[in-house]
Image 1 (tube, rainbow, N blue to C red):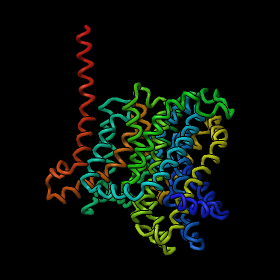
Image 2 (cartoon, helix red, strand yellow):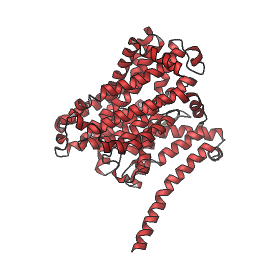
Image 3 (cartoon, rainbow, N blue to C red):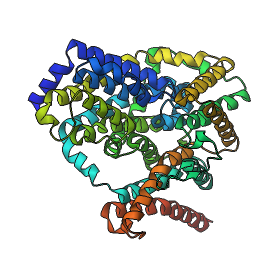
Image 4 (cartoon, rainbow, N blue to C red):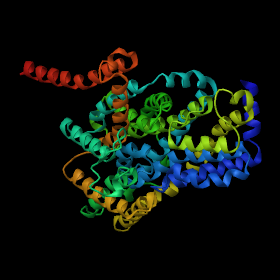
Length: 499
């Protein structure tokens, strides 16, 4: 192991590979700040430019873009309530509220340090336990995915500080949005209203930027000019997390890292699901769950650690089994194959320099992200000096550009404006948009897995109970839904006894 790591570091720390790693991480951060483009689009655009590079340098640069995006998306989520990527949607909930309280620096600081810690642990996991963990991921079949998605949706009640009924209503709305487009099994059109724009479903960029970005702009328009931002101290020592922040964040960072690492191994939005479930877990374990959504640092530390750990873990099935579990790793697989290298069980024997060079470059890349972004927090936080009258049009401009650049379709811009009004009225009537986003992301995956499971069992639902992993997950789901009812009954009984 030590010899392999030394081989990897000798490759990744060569001058040209350090340069390509730096280019990748900087590009990733910029892409994360610009909503709509995404790591997949960026890698697809840059893929032809890597043909003249050797395979290790090409993968190091493309990987840097992948894990650099996560931190870039955090910046816009905290400062402007615009999720740069889907996995940073949850960060908007408490991160933006921290910014409104003048604690944007602490939110960005804990996100940077938490991301670095989680990514480092994730990379250590790749180094040590990649093959067995990848094999475990392969034991997940459609029934297990169905149960996992149902468990994720059941936790939607903990994602919101609003009422149980309102939270479930928003989840149903998200599931409806996820059904728009073509049926994943039969190919039948659903809820498209005869327009080609909706044939592939609703893009995540118009939905997220509409509900969060445009919705926030519309809410700003009727508020008085806030003074809380102007009270922020912009000295760098006052922008870092305090000792109490670290104490409050230690547990969420650890739990988010472990959760993200495991879920990152699974096909589909592993890092996305990890960030939502991490937030739900922290709210469930908190002694003061009512504070979530008001600007609590645990709501930033947990999800940010989870999505970065999940991003690192996604390389395990790619490198050890040759299986890409999301769009970005699929593009990285293409880059491998274009250069004549096939990831899989034999890569360690045939191309150890490539495997260990890429793995060790992740250590370097995450260190670069930390060094680059921590000193820049003071600059980024200066965005909060801008008055709402100027900041609102800038946020709207970013959203319009992001929505249009997703597919160069004006209909996406109109959809974003529509969802902006939906987000505005949700704020007006005290509904939380986070459950909508979770249900929208998980809904199509849940439907596909459910129908595949029923096809495998000839229509029998018993397949979910006869498989141990799915049965355990469904039991956890039932417990999650029943526990609040017992808790309410206990509280009501206690009040009645007291009276």
